[in-house]
Image (cartoon, rainbow, N blue to C red; front, side, top):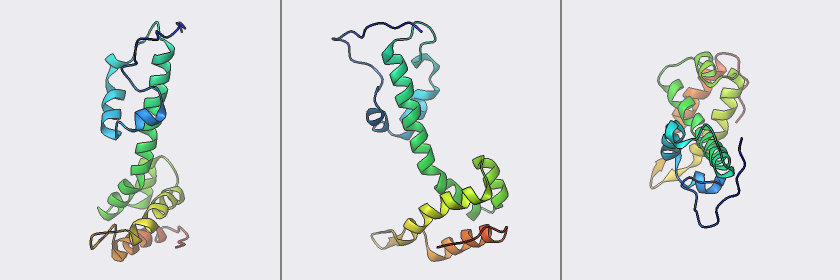
Amino acid sequence: MKQLPAKRDELPSRPITFRAAEDLGALELARLWADSSAWALTDRTQCDELAELAVMSALATWLRRWQPIAIHGAIIAGARPEAVAGALGDTVEAAFERWNEWALVQRDFIVGDKLGITADEYETVASRFGSVGVKLSA
């Protein structure tokens, strides 16, 4: 890796901090991450390294935030908790814990007159996890 001093009059074209990257939003981060032309393979500068780290870190944070929503949707659509855990790459218990932390907030979240998730949805998903031996706690 080549280390060059950063040019003072040159602004980076990609975010080099987590906050700046996170502000791009998940979809733009995913596009940037997938764009192989955005990432130099040789003669990388500190800006290249910082930009790659900022983008991957912010994208990982966004995706982790969305995992409980995907877990919820998969269970509601009929997926078994074991299949959800397999897709998550973790245990059924970890999938439940990640979903439950989000769902407890959503169950009480009201926008206008609409709940984030209904009590019936919560009970449906929780009971699906309970049916495979996950210890439920509210």
